[in-house]
Image 1 (cartoon, rainbow, N blue to C red):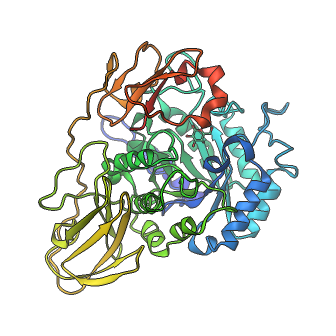
Image 2: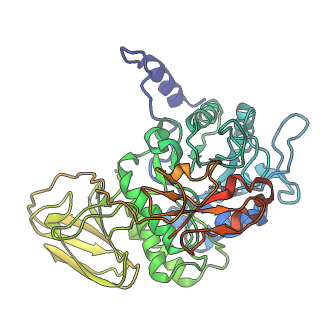
Image 3: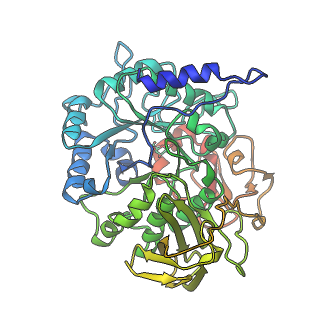
Length: 496
Ligand code: GAL
């Protein structure tokens, strides 16, 4: 057990209100004080290469491409690294074909390179791809991971109890906090410190309690390799920015940069938004094949420095005078957030090429006065009371702004966007929340309110969808699971 965790537990048990409710204390493992920087196998390889060689290639590329020098640290292997069953003593077993010398040998090699190693597991009986999950084995698994020297543990949410069954997945609100707490407590009692990454898909308002259990928490379902997905995750992030703090960050999911679904401008916006939103930046492409323009984006030192700022406060929307209000679920162009040594302003051409101007007096944290600015993609600098930039469709500019004289600072507020409701659906039945769209019991297409997404109904037993709109959410990552769990996946939201 690490000593500051012990302290956190003691303080936690002593701190009770008059009503006897325990006051939650932050997980105090000293990790994740800034958002994690790393790589994960899933977006690049899915189930096909969760192996020692994939990990070592990525680790070598961290060094060769100069990513390590920029702070990228975690080399993480996702689902499918195990064998399909536990050993006779109940241990998780690395697939010997993928890990011929076991996990610890690879961890040692990666540690020897000055990097860290992460693995993936699941709170239920099985991982999302059907490998053994940790339910009922939490202590044993935490000890095994510690004995291997694992530094980062991504914990998924499949095959957990839901609506009286154990489906592959289900969006209905459940007590996700209970099983994340169980593993979080197990991790507090092992020797090797592990960053605990909750892959809880944004269920059950995880941002409101995640920092008492882990170091980061997923805010949405899985990212897809397209702009609509990137934009909708960022739009969600703007509404919950206040929950990110050193030691506990909203996780907007792994990057799709380099995977071919985004234009170069969109890749800049993807990186810039994740960085200023203080999300972990976990690269998700094959680093042995990454193209020069994508590499230049992920190596932007100024933007990485903003992401890693010690204050750990996430940027969110602000509304410049004369601009319309944000619409719930839609990406808004204007972002700002405090830094330990200034303010970051992000401008994203969310709905087409445009010239944008921002007066610094409209920016939370700034005020009337003259400021020095630097735009991190172009490197341009200037001094004045405003900035102006022409951006191509979906491109982004990221400014670091520092005082250039006497200023009247405007108080920093976390402005949660006022909402206007999204357009009508065309399905039969309405559900109030996106989270309820994946449950059983709907027999027609369903319109989700409060989110700019539509649900599709998949006819049980056949992979065909009925959607109010044509664009289907890509499902390539789940094809293996369809035959087993079609009913559970039968309602899927489409990205607009
Ligand atoms: C999903 C998770 C993904 C990936 C996948 C593996 O639930 O959100 O990030 O880990 O499972 O099966």
